[in-house]
Image (cartoon, rainbow, N blue to C red; front, side, top):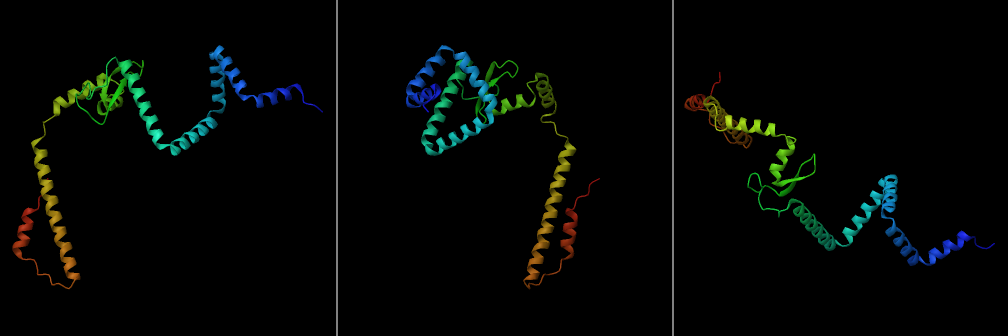
Length: 210
């Protein structure tokens, strides 16, 4: 039994892949919107499988050519920087446009509601805006709070902190002496008894809190 019409077409397509691909490119060029819609539907149906396949291919490509991957990454970063500078209308500065300092890196800050560019900020300032959800009222309240309390520490709190430090130092000295005595005793070294003057001196260093 001979080949059917479809069989002849299939065999011809297998033998002339270059011509088939050229026809497909001409067809795609005539109807780009249709092709984009078809590709979108296909990705929606087979998205997970495609992502896994693409990720595996990308890993294999990076492993096979690490130097090439570095070049591609550098070129990608250069393109992104050029695109963002074009949107910003000015080059990326070396310091933050808010604090005039450099912290970690300078980032492209944009409005999360409209997507429009706002400024070049350091990582710290950008994170602060994100943590308050771009709410200027919260930032003003925080600034007022800092203006009110910065540099104003309660004197009693300072005294209590000093007392605590002395107490901890005394306790650490006592613990270290006890540990040293225990180690020396285990080694067969005789430990002289504590004198009355030592007990009086240590007792005077203890601090009582009310």
